[in-house]
Image (cartoon, rainbow, N blue to C red):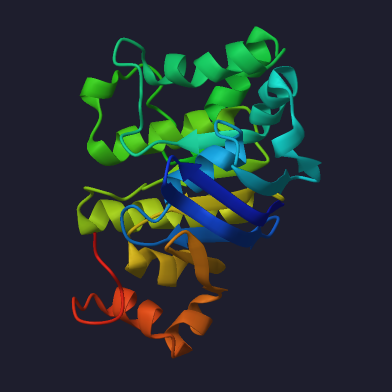
Length: 249
């Protein structure tokens, strides 16, 4: 679904992505992990087309993103739904109004079809009766779920999660992880890409993990591959040890 071919991104003399190669498989849950400053968010911005690489090629769903003009990029972004770190709900809108927003912007559905879609995604995230609640009336976990419902509403091909469990307590984090798996199983063909520092979630939830270090993919594989690796950088990161070959800025 997503391919990076020798992608580099430089800001002046600072290299964020350095000849990065990666593959994200269609219909799978892929976690992109790494310490802060390793290019995880920059990678997502390249996938969506918000940034262009200094060099290299990027393909999403068979189309080369790096060659798209502004109109093509606008259409390209319809393929994505995104759950932001803080859910990014509009405080002045109810749950159903938040979900309605992308449907009004990006679809030609009738009002009846939009209402049906809202009911569908609210049920999918386990909040079938939250239509008229404002964000201030929702718990942190519920706001996350409404954000996920909004991301799912336009039926994207690719669902992006930006640090979905950062700042969450363990119970809410586990609930969000369960939702990621649930959505991956229930929404036919959807590809999930999760940017995360939550290594426990990655090992328990991912079909594939991609670890970035110094702007490159240091290891890509299944959780079992990561558990069995002898790579010293990967082992240090996953063990949380300060001592080791990994450099800290």
